[in-house]
Image 1 (cartoon, rainbow, N blue to C red):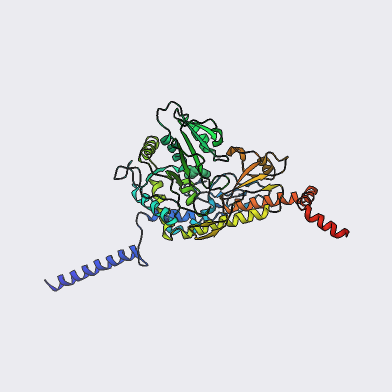
Image 2: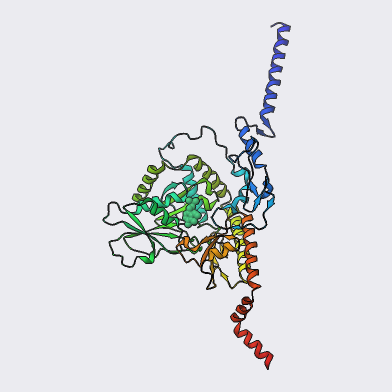
Length: 476
Ligand SMILES: Cc1ncc(COP(=O)(O)O)c(C=O)c1O
């Protein structure tokens, strides 16, 4: 090789090396590979997340966009304006639905861990490689979760996933009702019960099952009649750890355990029933992802539920399953400690504020929940229910929902739980803003009560023995 040729090769090699270094520098910074096709999506997600909405609302990637600009803020109740900074002072507290926004701050604190980016080609087919509708990985994580929390025995049991527990509730009724029986199975629950059991069972108007209301309505039941009992534990609305009322060969139970997590209740024991239903909505707070699961002991019941899911929707959205997997894996990273401590402390704090506010009232009373040993926290813990079940004690306050509505508190009437209208349910799992306005309105209501002359008389009535002693003391 000539001298000129040799220096030409050296220059070429140097140029290649420099180019390689430049490309490397562009793709590898701060010890990490730079993003390629995910970069735009990641930037978009961060841009929207950076819209603060004054801490009283949220902007979303799929939110309404005005004038082709960034998504608009969706404000919490009582807040408005383009950046949710305007508080409406006389607005009503929203304590109606069970939207679980109390966990939103937790996920904002864990933004990096919990984010996922879904490729345009992610799982486009109808099934997973094993021809099922269920992610094996997600099933394994749910098994692990129950083992770590100790709230349900899942070994050797079957799983069916649903679009929230809502879809699974009817799938379970369908699976438990005997086929082609001469009379339909009776579906019952104990008052106060979650109304969806009734509305859903009635919606489907099946020949195989019929909603019959309260368990106590089954007075003239014969041994041959089949009964399906919904057992909600902790119960919505009153937080009680209900047990099945009916037992026998023709009675089956659907255990709705969606609130059986340490945020809302002590976990006294690992539940080991034939059919239990759980939901992401109340575990991680992601009600919008519509993901729930049923844990089933009996294979033929499992087959019927799986058939229901396959026929009604061909399983749960694969995107929802991916999201559920990510969220549950974040929960598992600390053995649930971070989320359950956050959830329990938030709910306990809310319950204490509520009980303090109503403790000076003779007009309203709350359900009683005793402290109990929790196997998860390994200590006796106080109540932290998802809902307050309020009773209006005055004879004339027959419609407690109306009493609250007039005081600018929107709850849910007792009649929506097949109970007396003297009761109203107040949701405690909504956003901190909703809860703060609720406490404000209830404090005003109690203050008004204390300023009425009848309040002083009531207090004297309640403390009659003490008052008499004092009077005697003054006389003698
Ligand atoms: C007792 C009970 N079961 C089931 C559900 C349905 O929840 P999801 O369909 O979001 O899982 C709820 C919702 O509030 C509930 O309170």
